[in-house]
Amino acid sequence: MEIRIEKTGDPRQKPSDESKLGFGTYFTDHMFMMNYDEGQGWHDPRIVPYGPIELEPSAMCLHYAQEVFEGMKAYKAKDGRILLFRPEKNMQRLNSSNDRLCIPFIDEDFGVEAVKALVEIDRDWIPTSEGTSLYIRPFIFAMDPQVGVHPAKHLLFMIILSPVGAYYPEGLNPIKIYVENNYVRSVYGGMGYTKTGGNYASSLKAQAESEKIGFTQVLWLDGIERKYIEEVGTMNVFFALDGEIVTPELSGSILPGVTRMSVIDMLKSWGYNVTERKISIEEVAEAARDGRLLEAFGTGTAAVISPIGLLKNGQDEIVINNGKIGDIAQRLYDTLTGIQWGELPDEFGWTVAL
Ligand SMILES: *Cc1c(COP(=O)(O)O)cnc(C)c1O
Image (cartoon, rainbow, N blue to C red):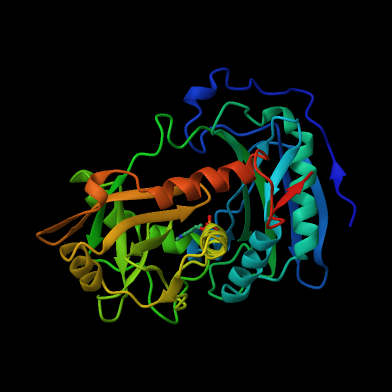
């Protein structure tokens, strides 16, 4: 399919201070759109000036949340190349989310092409200071003007771009995490393994309550036994125990992170014993008491690697590595960002240049 391109005649002001970009507040000059209509399939892919879109108030996405999204980044390397990180994995996951939410599949190769075409047009928006990048947000939502509950016959696939700042302007800072014993994010059989707005809507209250008492994010436990660790807010989670690095297995309620997958491969290539298995919060607390819990960290596109310095579980405070960043988390962060920014050899073949 040919992407029709309509360039803006009125380019927007780019943020002048890259140290104040933050996350997801600025958007570039253009956006990608493609419609789905039953009988026609996906059609009319186009890149148009960024701006508001029209929706009927009855549009189904607004009522029943038939919506999926992805999150990935483009980086400007020092040699001028623009790099994407494993974009095909994001498109595969988008289709896995599509499947769960009765959204018609997209052609994954075409999805990557659409991302490349849009990033190319707005390449001047990619920030260049250390740690910054261009966040890429593909999303699909139901447009049918109908408040009956059924899978949509009319959908829109869009991609928007946002220059984002360094997640850690002062270096990697360990975060404080609240172990959530009241609310749950998802259960087996639900949508936990998909990237869909509904999972985030249901997480807002726990997130807000934990922030109020001084925590960055919550650690979710499984929805059935309230025992086994699932993930953290927008990140998968790893625990470095003496002799074993554990991450919760993909049980159906956990988001299969691209960063998680990449971290597992990197750790294995460095000779670590990495296991994907059930791990209970009790096991982590016990390992901490016995001095066998060396490090804990989250992994995700936005933060890359986020060391965890403290876990609050009921009355119990689990301090990890004296609240300081550990060697494994630091090495993972340095290596992964080095590959993403084209500064280290890409031994795994993960980066894709535009
Ligand atoms: C996106 C996301 C992650 C991280 O996935 P990456 O592909 O590594 O960015 C983890 N958990 C949740 C709930 C997410 O939405």
